[in-house]
Length: 265
Image (cartoon, rainbow, N blue to C red; front, side, top):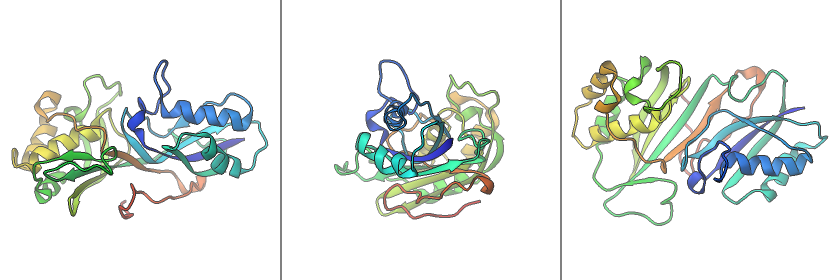
């Protein structure tokens, strides 16, 4: 039986999603709990491998099991076995041709900036604090240059192993809610550090260090060194993964927390 799970996690205490030796990972905790529920070793496949310190509200995984279990065992049962900062949001049997990574048609991230002169205490692990005022209207203006199919070499990590730097951004917006600035981005796929590198450059536009047209110039020059520093991991969330309707993967609130769901193409 192949089963899909929706996973939510606070990535602050983990070295990232992917299982690694000698360090703690989200995948390791999920597989440990699943193996107990199924009573045999389980390996999972995820939709998107998040980096150290990055969070997820909409991660999707799949696994194979021969164990005869009700889906409640993979939700309530799993949630009793895992640390408090990891939770299962849904469990559903899926067709044998469903693949959490390769069946995905798009992924969506949100980056949350606490834009205040003084740091906060309550949500400090789930947001990036930035004390200088950001002009979200200029940042939004710059977004238009990134939407569509482009070579994102200027926004990929130097050690990125993707075969091609070409990606298609379907949606990119910057909005302010009080002291919070939220960057919402959806693409067919992402390069390593792509969202955080785009965020770093948009923040420089928001500081009026650069004009919005500078973002287009960065795209055209295809040089990572010309763009801004990589934004911190703390404010980044994988919030949604798109799949063809035939797989009937449940939709869950995007989050994080109180942020409203906004439909984008």
